[in-house]
Image (cartoon, rainbow, N blue to C red; front, top):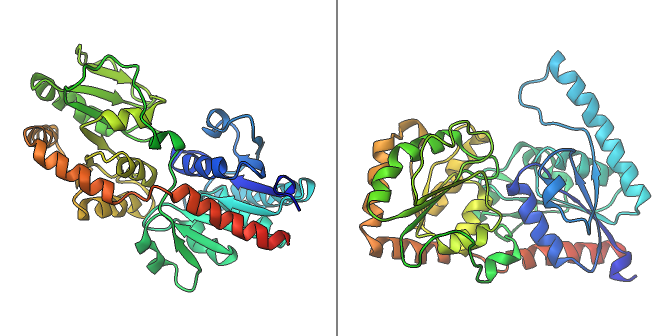
Length: 357
């Protein structure tokens, strides 16, 4: 059987944290026919290239306990499982690969019903509900953090880190008006933005700019106060496509602590101040950030205790200490697994090869 006749269903949806690792793996598996499972009107609509046929299901996550209000969600979930099962039959799909989130559940269950392999990648240190509930029905669970294995007893796990897009491994040029040599602070809240962080940054930014720094602030699209602070050296954008080039150029990043973002910071050797999203499921961003902090690659500030004054002074201390920033950059680099996408793709490839023999 040729590789092109082998079909893989990738189930990844919603946020960059789920989509970018899946896209990195897909790049490595270009010899296979790949079908993409997502949800309508989510990021995959624009991020997943047209070379992959996109299929959508109507599903959402359970944000509360079971009750009358969750009954329609449960009905759609059951329907989604059978939709995915029909998709597997129609395209003669040989295996399912998913990066977690609620779309992973119907994909894994449908794979189980059709008796084909399922591979799940869990990027966060604390595994999500879908991983905890359904990993026993996967052939293998790939991990973004080695320590996550302790939360998945009796499950076959392999540590592969979290894949990043290929552009992070080559030098990228910026099309932003930032002079060479000046300190650059980059603020990013992840693919959804971070309004609370944005407000603190705007209150603290003047002191950093007075020191000669430039700021690139990626606000997301939900911040209504984006025009409330302006300065010639303050560049405010809802998002920026060339994140690889931006992180390569940055001297310091202020960020949430999504697993994908931390991996990108490690690959680009970028020091960071991490402000974990306090409402993340199981507080997983705090656990993610602590791995970075324990390695000396970043500082962790808790949002509930953070003020603009604390943030301002913390950044100023780092800007006044280039040697500390350099040491943090080196320690960030030590966390990087540069062949993560290849390792995960090989895991998928080996399972596909066995299942189609």
